Image (cartoon, rainbow, N blue to C red):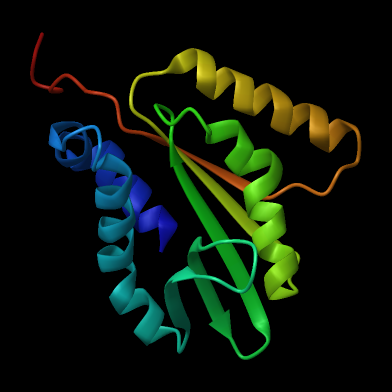
Length: 150
């Protein structure tokens, strides 16, 4: 589901939709498009998708489940000042509330390479230190030149 969204953003000009949205609404737009892109996948794979599920520590962006197999997904834009808090704290707390170890953290880069590097450096350090980490998916939503421009 997230790979479909990632490919759409990076290779089918989905980045235009994200970047053209007002900055106050971008993260919600991203969440809604992820939800839309996942509907057919969810149905085809007999999964359940909940948006803004709140089991106690606040609403996680997405919860995907099949029976007791639960995955929580937290999505942040690189422009969000709380993007590291989402990685460091939110996704793990939401996973605890759902009693799962399956966590995914999605960072959608809207033009903040320093923040992307900071997250990747932390993620790699956490892995090297043997910490439990979410799967991290980076999505490049920066403006792209046409391949036909020479």
